[in-house]
Length: 68
Image (spheres, rainbow, N blue to C red):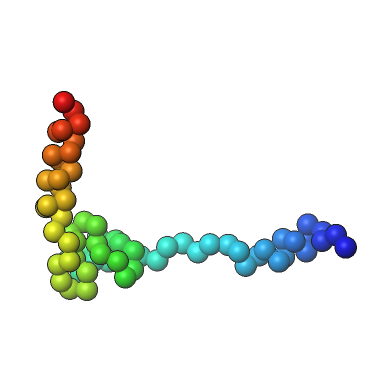
């Protein structure tokens, strides 16, 4: 038996995605996804987890090498 558009769409009514939840970083006050490291400062749960200065220098070196 064929499912009509209304029955099909009623079944799919629960398939909608929710917007990602964000929280405010306690260090730099930037918005980031919950339970993840802040991409601005590298802090998570009140402590420094990532050293973003090392990442920035690697990225700059790679960009300089690519320009040649």
